[in-house]
Length: 606
Ligand code: ARG
Image (cartoon, rainbow, N blue to C red; front, top):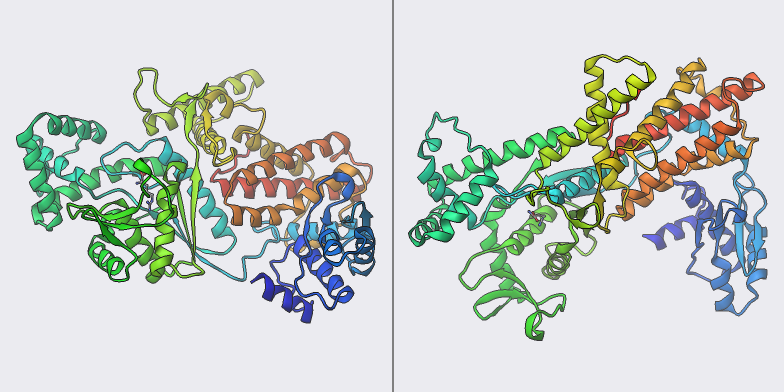
């Protein structure tokens, strides 16, 4: 794709300009043109254009001269000089500068920056960012808790990260399938059904509205019963066989159990405002046998000690033996891997997915690398299908210890979310009292919910995805630092400044606004606003939500510097006041969009 893009560019630079091209891509294009003119015999162009690594290098830099000079045994500084002279870009940049040993540095023109800001201002919903011309069908497999088992903090991370990535991909115009691959199948159901029949036989009556109460407790009790009594074990085994054979009674009991779990999961999703389509493991049952047959027929899987195995990945396990991906156990049973193979087959064939993302903890990395390799080998995934495991680290308690309650129990997600909301309410009431403000009870509840849930989401997303992070209510709810309350506060404050200015930005008005970017803090804020699009493309590729949080934090810092230096409401002229109010509005809109992509709604006052 890279190659053909460049070929297109060389033949017709204007035609190559896409509406979703960023400033960096535009510049890269121009550098490529210059290179083509300078070295017509060369055919593998890499403009090597990146954001400037140091402020004195301007806004962007090209490192192309360095590798080119090496290859052609030329002086890198001279090559850089030639590139600088031949790059046509006075509509975008100042005259490019050369820096040793051979960098070409580009500084955006104020005029160009101002025009881009106008475009953003005229489009408050999308801020000038057009949806991708090349849309992908992206299937995001996230959240995915297991029926009748604990939905734990790992699933919470998956839910929060997955939702954020979906929101970003949706915003960029892709078709996103949000899939909840719940663990709703497996041998544990034999035990659960047997226990259910024993303890609550009436639960399975047509008209029954019995609730099992805490399903995790129910699971634990069933497990205890199973471990203690061999007669019960036998009953449980028979239930598994009956369930797998599709026995009507068993299926009924199984759906009853799933329904109980589903209700509990839904409460969490509602609190988090996350939308998911459930398509659990059981969905793939009818294809498991076919998948194994296809794997064996093609020779991708082989029998080894009675089990059907795929030897991929080359990871060694015990006794130095290669650890294969087992798709059928020696007792004939299917497993987690069989289901994932069937799922890829279905997702590519039926869902027509171009890209599939799996959001789970890093512990499952080996499993996915093996599944992906096997899927490519047998052709369930096409050569160009992008299969990506999006791993994340553990949630720990403060001090890096295992995340548990004081009593050593696992923390219930509902309690965890409610506690954040409770503390947010407490903080807010204190603040109202200290500042002598009054708000309705309804508004207080709303603020508490948005801040509490937002704080949990933000604290998760702002970290490097793959590292472990320490859960701290105090830190995540702080009004200072890189937190949700700080960002919500920054938005409300900036929006408030803008409101006081009475600037008319109704239809058509914004086009006439002239941005004046004379103060360095104005220009620096403006350039940060311009980076929104590039930041989102980076996120689309790397799938790291902290890119978004870092961006917002830096934006709010630059806004503060601007606001400390440049009077807004008392600006020295009407023109400056207008320009600065518009900068406020753009900053507020940008923060609002970013918060929205993180799954956090904004508040007018906090
Ligand atoms: N249910 C699994 C767990 O709790 C996660 C499933 C992830 N998705 C998948 N296609 N394997 O660990």
